[in-house]
Amino acid sequence: MANSWFNYNDSGSVNEPTSYAAITNPSCLGNQRLCAVNAEIQLIDNVQRPVITGALQSEISTALTNHKASTNVSLKNP
Image 1: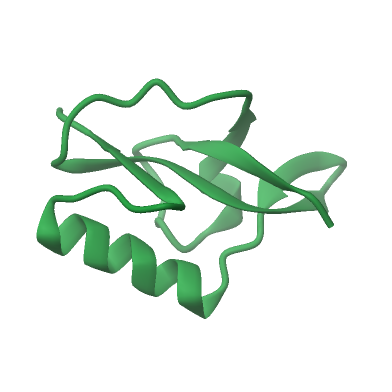
Image 2: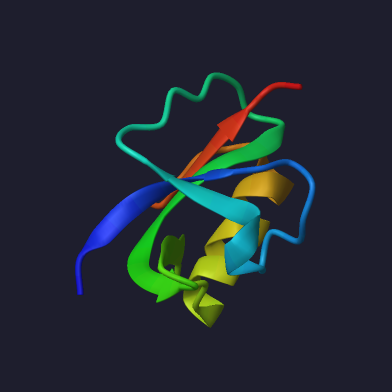
């Protein structure tokens, strides 16, 4: 399957695919909060959502802890 960027909606669990919406390119500035993830695409109720793997969960956690974006995780300021 292909990968895509998904914008985090700031309200649900970062590990829940329905907390994200597909986007073309993230426009994230900062290093304090989750902005977007790059992940494999899955369809949930005919809507593109990210596959949140254990590796991606770990990458999200590390990025948030270290306040540093990574290959698959973009951050933003509040």
